[in-house]
Image (tube, rainbow, N blue to C red; front, side):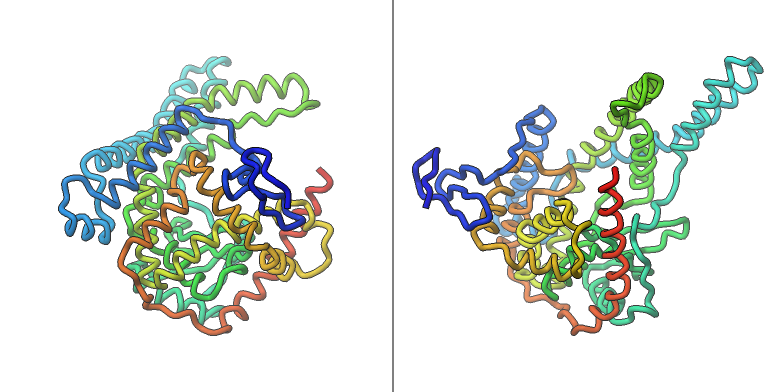
Length: 419
């Protein structure tokens, strides 16, 4: 066994995986992030502060603190003020659309040749910033109640436990993720099941996954609301339009145009960041609350196991799909993914857990670090779970759309080889 170059202790190594040191964590993080910006440090401060506030609410007696923690309370005036400010920014964002429209009308009424250029830009910005409902999940295949009665029966039972409204559709996609959202002008409710993630979970972990996502329908997460959610969606569209995508060989005219758009997009990015910072605390609190409701529905053991799977199984699935090998494989994609994940040695799973803890600064802006979510659930009273996973009928119902999703993933991978 090779010794660690940093502390001279034995390394853990199971070929073909590279060795790492369990004593000093050498080579645990294979691609460490060197970016330690003020925003990243602020994120870390907010994450730790929120966790401390939830687990030990200030000024509360021990029994009251435990009761508040179980109820998902805490946050106080500061969190409420930040959330109100986020809603104010969202409303101002919605006012940008009529404002740009009126600016465009003003320039058009000037009736000069030069006025039509800013008028066109103003009308275009008004169109991009128009309030719009979220679209159906990209790449998702719709599954109705008639086509999947057993799956929807499970969704109804889970929804009753977590207080979620009735699900209208299921979207089966190739994402290594899951979500609950409303889409379209009729605000139809859809549960997205990313089949690559669903595939590597146990039946009871799948119940926990559905419960966690459906709990977001009413746990105080402003990002899923009509006002803030649609504002963030409109700003996201404008951010994508103004993204700098110039590449070598595109020409100078394209470079000038892309640079101009990127400069115009700076205020948009600043507004998105401001809204996310204001909603940061409520968004992360909502994740903790969704975990609690998932534990109530599926059980504490299954929910903690699900969170561990997001580190030790979902990350390898991402690696498998991004490794460029999908395009050249001729075997069944889902069987290959399941075999790949099951073949991971325990030492590699442990490295992934440690890497997740060491990469605390790299948490995203909506989810707390997974290990903190697991610690939080372990500290709460144990839940046995009120919804049991059904038999194999759901797998049969998901098989047809899953086959089409696998075909789409393979076709996308093959087309990427030519770019």
